[in-house]
Length: 317
Image 1 (cartoon, rainbow, N blue to C red):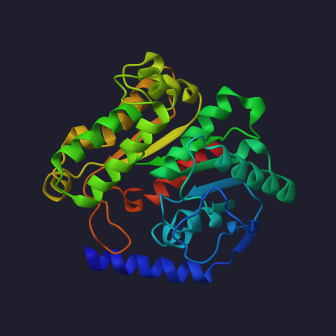
Image 2 (image 1 turned 90 degrees about the vertical axis):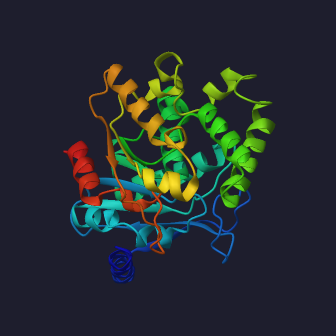
């Protein structure tokens, strides 16, 4: 399996180099540190793939936390398939973020405006998505745009999201469990950092400040209408998550309470209850592999690019 993954990733790398794209500079500085781990410059930019045929819509692909764009595009075929079907593809250099997301929103707005004005594309033809933090940004942007449309340039037509942590109260409890177990050091260090950030921003735990966590979560289990999830009740949504119990137990000593899929499934169910018939979750098993071939369900490989593209095209018909 690892050899197969490695071959596919190598093929994607050569395809990426062969495929024509433009690099558009947005800013020569990055004061909010929206793009990390490039080890090159503080430049903010986006890659743009413009199809030769009439443009059907715009696909925006956002990297995971700390992941450079090139590595994102090596792991998927979605951008290549979309390009061939007449979608203009955008890949912005946003792989980190701020607490209130305003800096990220401003950059996305600038990109969206440039694309609309340059290519004369309707603002209702944008599909946005990503993995992990990229998924969080996509979902958060859309919720806030629906809630306050006068403050946003556009509302995405649909969202695709991979393995996003949605409920900050539940995620806080996950961090507490990781710290208490104290087994896998990288996860423990990350959990301490996340918990510290939440304590600093919200004043303490979800038990002490439940409303703050609901206010700042994409979805809140037990809250009326799922909390902020209610703003997605009219937005088409395709979510991916991978249930790999062997990896959870034997690699990370975790159980289903630590699995992002619990909140993903819960939110999709809540949206269906609210009347969203185009909210869907695809649960794979054992499909997750990182760029280097190591097994990990928190990965781009859990997405079937063709399935995702077919869903996207159905929204643009």
